[in-house]
Length: 450
Image (tube, rainbow, N blue to C red; front, side, top):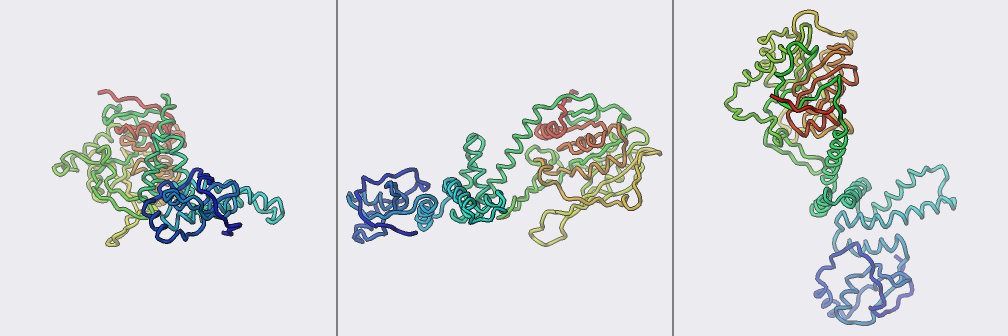
């Protein structure tokens, strides 16, 4: 920083505008140290309009001591002045993320204007696109406030959301500043914004003549032999009260069924799981038409039990399919194999089942895809990918057929049916998952009676 025309000024002539750093610390103790040192300190920096740039603590200490004339020097206006304030504060105490955002927001228009001027003056090649220019501005600003560009952009989104809707998001700024960690607060922001979007879309859902969304837990009210295909992922009481926390990514919560108790069976230690599974299987058999099919996602411990239950209920068992997910969750303890697949049991009711053969190379019993990411991802913890459900629906049903998912979750089966021209019945007991289904499918739910 170049200091120009160092001189002295009365303290009352210096204007102090809004400051990014609010906490000046113990001014009395600092003032006494200045007195002891005889006032030998670096000059305060001001603009040519005599507005304070750097030295707020020194100015406050001088006023505390009632010293009238103090050493000052000019600082360049604009970004250099902002950097001077940053440097002064960073040496004393690192900015919390929201303070870094405040400085960045002041720097960005100044830096962007400088970049535009360079472009106009020919110092930049005209072939450089605008997006790249803005990217370079953000890189420079992020470096100036001491954050990575991606981290700064996340912090800016958190602060902007809190300004627009403090009731919903102000606590995320506090969380970010208290912990000093931006990413966890940003993940929470994204999840809350996604939930708001779901609520808005769900409010627009309407009843449909082709599809049904049933808010309830009793698919026994569905008529006998009324569906061509049943495809579902039942709860298996496999949630565990365990949470794995990482520094640079979202925590892995093994207790995914806890919030609504949908994957915690009451008195589960006394439950004979086979009795429960057999009861489901008998209902599956009742509602599926002759020649219909059933696909059931199944956790490892229950494959043999569910296979036996389907056979005991009357189905003819065909295959165990494997869904290999290519982006499995990590295994932090490194004591066992990484779980990278889920199993799908395939059975049919009687002869003549629909099976749309697509060629020997396409009909392997392994389906590969990633788990749900990006825009497809919903707040449901065990959501199945659309590409997997589409594969099952396409092979084992025809356009116009009725497909049932009695444990509908996030409604992936319903969306797959809509894309492939099938009708659907989705049954789901959890209120917030019903909202996800309504948002995804546009079909309004009906409250189950009886």
